[in-house]
Length: 330
Ligand SMILES: Nc1ncnc2c1ncn2[C@@H]1O[C@H](COP(=O)(O)OP(=O)(O)OP(=O)(O)O)[C@@H](O)[C@H]1O
Image 1 (cartoon, protein in one colour):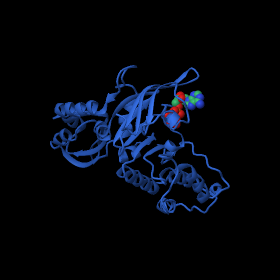
Image 2 (cartoon, helix red, strand yellow):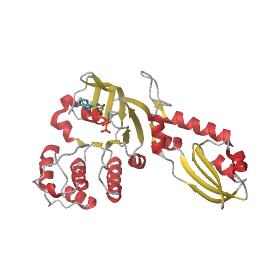
Image 3 (cartoon, protein in one colour):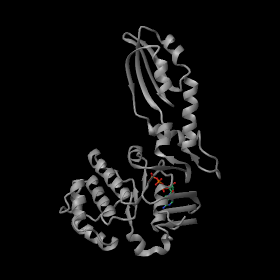
Image 4 (cartoon, rainbow, N blue to C red):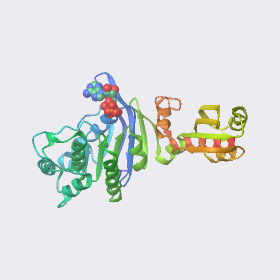
């Protein structure tokens, strides 16, 4: 039980009379990446700041690397790499100097590690921070979080301001840290980074964890956008074939080149493929599952557990939903 990198039970935080966290349970094992996702104001930053002892909880039990963050002091802090969401850096000093300051706080850094990270992320450490763009400052924030190879990385909106190439390097760094046995807690409302790197997700909304599970389950529950054109038929005949499939936001129209279908598809693909095999398919475009849509459905409350109930298990929710819809549509 105490081997968890993070263990949180019944965590509550009130700002004055306003509850920001309303009883959160979280567990993160070494060598795994947990994505904490949630809309603005859900309580992500509040949770992370409590783990780092930058904020005090109103109640609840918190263990970070087996210790109470309020008592762990500098020794515990050295085992953690933290990237704050609102990174503020002093403008006069160079990146190199700033990192040597962080080194004195976060402990031993392997020789050449900062330079190696700067090279991989494409950052010139000799430039004064004030002259760096937002994305380049974010790179500096990432270097200080990763450079001492911490046992636990706590990253708040880590790819904010980074271009796609650098985002990819960031994901590599997270995977390498996990491979070395580090635990990573990644807060984000950008689902692409979560789906590419997280093992598990916890969905936070209005200060409560409303769902937990692995990313694969979330993907199973995510709708795909489908576009197709069918020839030698009309929209009524197409509808007769497809009406029983788990489609949403369906648009069917008779055009000069055929019947155009555009829809969101929930569930297993196989029933869809079997159904359209009865039609003459001229064009077909099936997009990757849309995680944004799946999570928005969770936020919207159509599935959300009532106050005091356990979070939804994504595997149960989407595993069963996928099979039922698949059978119904076959
Ligand atoms: N210092 C504060 N004083 C009062 N209320 C606060 C304070 N900090 C946060 N809150 C409130 O607590 C709730 C949770 O905020 P928090 O910043 O943890 O959310 P978040 O999930 O990180 O949001 P975002 O994605 O916008 O950063 C919000 O309703 C916010 O308005």
